[in-house]
Image (tube, rainbow, N blue to C red):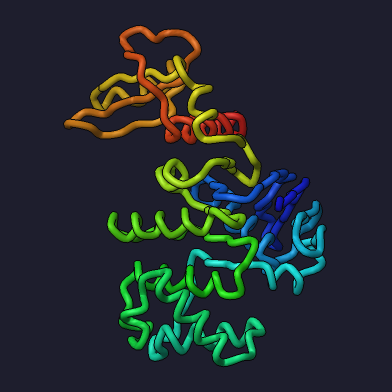
Length: 299
């Protein structure tokens, strides 16, 4: 199964051009969509999730039982195959997780009460909420609410799952639990993970894209993208007051405070005087692509 996105564009009424001819091919498994806040990730996710219209372009889901679904026009058919966890979602604080999932399952067309009960119990066990299924959702922690969000997204055995910034605000333990859950889900379906947290994509995804200012600036396997930067990332520790000077003479892609000094990462095809070579990682790929795009727009 594949999700084929071609030349997708969206401009809002206020003039903000959120998507600019976005083209992506997303296959079964975990797909990471990286980008800064305001890059267009949520606009793309909402369009794929049939929650907003595109101005132009096409989105098709191939390899389903209907063989070739037009996501932009066959919305009801797509929704039957879709699980969606938005960046922000509300819960009814005085309703139990068990009752809420049963209600959502009913809305998704699962009419048999016995079947709903079996599905709900299985999902609550899957997301490790079965022991607290009788508690009101308003008593849940942030991580528990996120796991409940995944449970509701999994109702109906969706073939396409979209999760938008799912680990933002979670503590390290909850993030690890969420990673394990997403990895398990991604074995048998398309899972699109939209995030600005590079580590999430590093840990979870076999394919990815970076989006900036509404445009795709990189696609590929994370390891391959990192390997493309081998021998091109250089590091130096400087005083904070020196950063501006180095920015004028070098292509600085990131800065990080370390041991009281600022550690610079610079991009260069050739060795840099007084800089040390450093093995690149996906964060370097991210910052290199984002700063390159920003520099082009600024010039």
